[in-house]
Length: 104
Image (cartoon, rainbow, N blue to C red):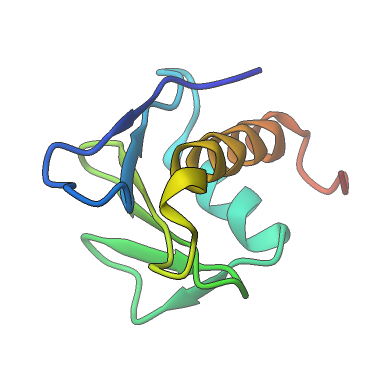
C-alpha cells in the first residue's frame, strides 16, 4: 500500500513532503502506529502533533485537517530526498495498515 506523496508547496529544498492518508484511516490510529514504530512525540498533543525519528526525520500531523507532512533532515543528500520521502511515506502507510498490537 502506498499513499500519494508530493513536495509541499512551501518547500524549495526538497525537505518538506506531503502525504495523503486514506479517508477511512482514523488520525489517532495513524499517531498510534507512528509511536508504536519508534517515533517520539514532542510537546503536548494538541492542534499539531509533532513526531520524530532518531535520524531527525519528522512527521507532522494536523488532526483536524488530516494534513500529514514529512520533514527531512537537511543532512539527507539533495539527490536522495525524494526517494527518502517516498520511503518514509511507504513505511507510514505500512505501519498504519497493521492491526493494533502487531509488530512489523
